Amino acid sequence: MSAARKLTCLDCGQVNRVPADRLDAGPKCGTCGAALMPGKPIEVDPKILDKAARTDDVPLVADFWAPWCGPCRMMAPEFSKAAGALKGRARLVKLNTQDFPQAGASHGIRGIPTMVGWAGGRERARQSGAMRAPEIEAWIGRLG
Ligand code: ZN
Image 1 (cartoon, rainbow, N blue to C red):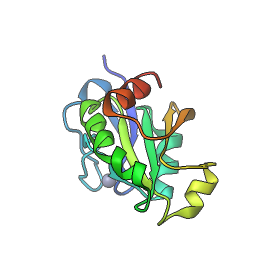
Image 2: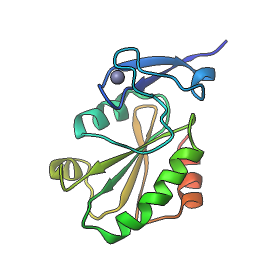
Image 3: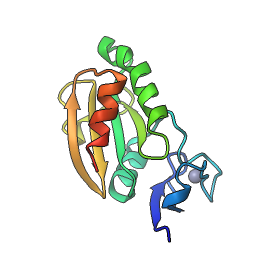
Image 4: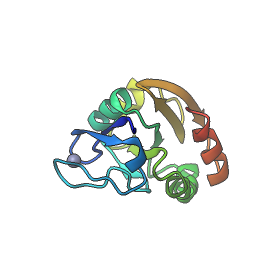
């Protein structure tokens, strides 16, 4: 018995249902074929982010960042490492607040980088300031 987990495709926004024991088996979107558990951070637009945050059963973490932000650029490889380590357990995405300033405002982002974590359709935690991969993994591990 394996309950299905809802996962919003980060590419096309389609909601997929994936058996829990298939999350680490490279599931793909039934509509567009994109990897649902890519194991690396995906750049998303605010519409997909909000849908995934509301819908997904698997923990979702967004890094609000901008290209001009030095600490954001420093954290990027650490965030990527954490995404690889957490493949099949959590999804990590990035939202560029320079391209989408409204999204930063609507999520109440005051400084970047800020990570926001959702699980079960609710925001569970947020964290400002750059962190290293092991700290990011530990932080995400506590989202439930
Ligand atoms: Zn898709």
